[in-house]
Image 1 (spheres, rainbow over the protein chains, first blue to last red):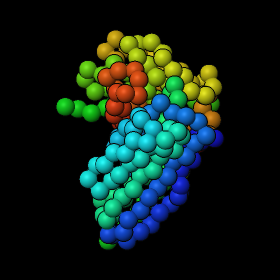
Image 2: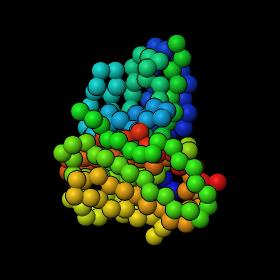
Image 3: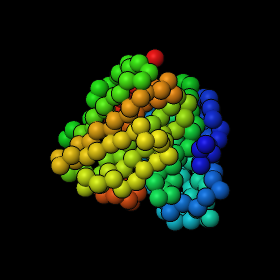
Length: 108
Length: 114
């Protein structure tokens, strides 16, 4: 059973579109991380959020941590084919708990 | 600088056998964590070792064990393999023990149990 629920499970969009993926839990986390994983590779850390309500931006990616530190969202603006991958969220609850991920495909 | 390395990259075993997976962390990193990623799921935490001591254990049976060596490399051992152990086994290293330190993942070892 995944402690963190990610939605949607799959997302296929055209290049240039915007999208938001979600990571929800009933548990409070001291911090939450977002990773991207490509086939045949391990996950790569994108961002860590630690403060409730925190918003972090990395170029076209915007990450938000919920006020209660139970949920988070990742918004991508003007998606590109290079954004294709599995997006995972992970919460620190004494050990790292991962969601099942959102598999994003951006078509040229 | 070399990233986290894992060996072997692929492995096929039969039910009941045992397996040893190896991980070399990034130079200077003292923490190694092991994860199991079943197809279609996110990684599940198995163990964390820091300074050669077990610092965390996930909800896995005693068939799973690990250790960390003086050079901070690590081995994951799985005994009495079951079909359900088929997965990608990921190793991650970090400078410190807590999540405030970034984890760097290796490419994983894909284990198939037949």
